[in-house]
Amino acid sequence: MAGRTWTRADVAAVLSGPTASDDKYSRGVVGVRTGSDRFPGAAVLGVEAAWRTGVGMVRYLGPDRAADLVLARRPETVTADGRVQAWLIGSGTSADARNDAETRALREVLAGQVPVVVDAGALDLVADAGAPVIATPHAREHARLRESLGLDPDAANAECETAAALRGILVRKGSRTVVAAPDHDPIELDAPTSWLATAGTGDVLAGILGGLAAGAGASDLDTLQRVAASAVWLHGRAAEHAVAAHDGGPIVALDVAAHVPFAVAEALGS
Image (cartoon, rainbow, N blue to C red):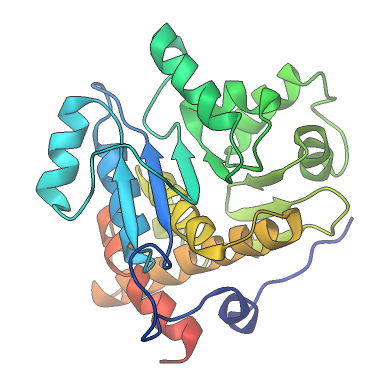
């Protein structure tokens, strides 16, 4: 199945700037349950990226070490539980190292009503989700996910088949990222720079996804596919802005997160 392209105009139709009547709650609240003692930086990257989308509030619920680093970088982050419009889970975690209490907490999130961005160490739980999901595997994670679902690893239109099996959105990350949804044509976006191939940029993408999902105000699959494609576009454009700021040289994940506002402004035409 041929993939659709995604343009700045498509992204602009998904985004909205703040109005005089907005407050932090109407701009969207994203809950983030990411990071671990082994990989606390993933929490910092995802939270930073979520804030940079223009979301109204980020709630971080994770290990103490990661929470301390998040607050040192972004002191406006709330570390108390409460109402959210979307969740981000799994970045910087491993299913092998997850304890029973954390598994129960993640399953509770996945059994809820709001959209959940499912990354990295939480992908093993996504098949049982009742919530609307946006799963974000890279190629190797996608192969493992398909194996767990009993799907042919060599099938044509594999991304669409996986999305149908999950009854959600699949963002298969790579130099060409495919955003698939059940009963919709896939959307394909090429990475605009190979400097994105560095540690932590996937955590940044997950944070952008969480922020946009929280601000979208809807959880139907059509909306979530458009949100996911727009997040991938913003991630790529932020990387391009970061590379330009470094005269074409290498960038790191925080550089991408720091340039998300420039990509948002570009999409909104401001």
